[in-house]
Structure formats: C-alpha cells, structure tokens
Length: 182
Image (cartoon, rainbow, N blue to C red; front, side, top):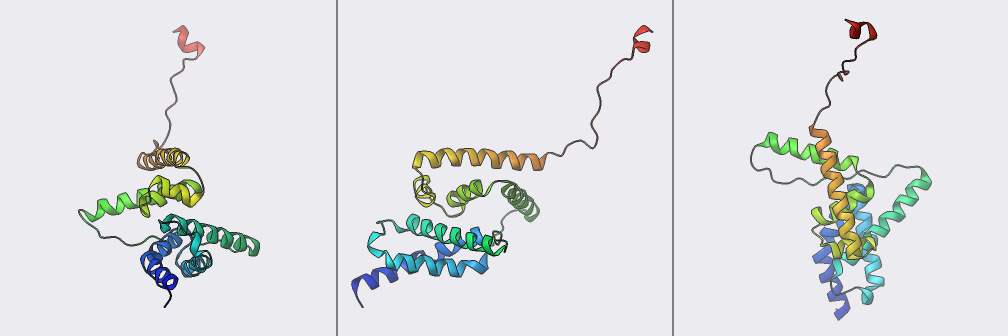
C-alpha cells in the first residue's frame, strides 16, 4: 500500500463520521451517505491540496456537495430534506430536557438557513470560528460577527416561544366628551 493511500485511509477513518454528521444535520440521513462519498472522492482527487487540519476543508467540500444537491433538487422541484437530529443521553428531569430541546429546535427552525448553519458548525460540530469560517468561506472575524448575531437571534427566537402573548389586548381607557363633562 502506498504512503498516500495509507494517509488517505487514516484521514477517512478519522473524519468520515464527522462529515456524515454534518451532512445529516444539513440534509437528512437519506442524502448523508452520498454526500460523504462525494466529499471523499473530491478529497482523493485533491489529496495534495488538503491542509494540515483537514476537517474544516472536508466540511467545506461537503457544504459545496450539498449546495450542488440542493441546486439539482430545485431543478427537479423536489424539496430538500430537513435536518435530522442525533439522539443524546438524557440527564436530570426528562420533562425539562424535552421542553428545553423542543424550545431550542423550534427556535432553530425559526432562524434562517445561514444562521442555523453557523450555529450548528460551532455548537454541534465543535468547530472554532476560524474553522467554521473556512467551511463557509469567510474570515474568522466575519464568522465571529455572524456567530454573535445568530446567537442573539436564537436567543430572541427562544425567548419569544417562552413568553405567550395575552389572550386579548386591553384597550386604554378613553373618555368620551359626555363622560368628560360629568
């Protein structure tokens, strides 16, 4: 086995699951396997261009593959899949965990695709702002600003789901001319 083949295999083993998780979070399980396959095909063709830290580069390729899939879906008028969420261990009061999770998922759903992607790259996939910037093709400073704004919009969306508007709005008291004369 050649040295390049061994290094590629090691990279594939190290990062396949993380690329798959990114694809699932962006396009659902049905498309994830195809995205991973295409991502690593590109990685093999451009193996000598891969930076020392390959994960942001691989996720950037996966993002481009997903964009190509979305364009193809749009041309065929087939709606793209929605994000699928991995199961996680439940600790503490399950009712609180479920309520918190539903609140956050609903708040995420109210955000734009761009805001969701920025938040998920950092929070879900564990990338630094510099790595996430590499994935989406912007500078670290720009990514930090996008992340800050997306967190604010997420907080606002989550808070708006927590506070329910009153059932009916009370009208301010206004005196009529007759009442004022009394």
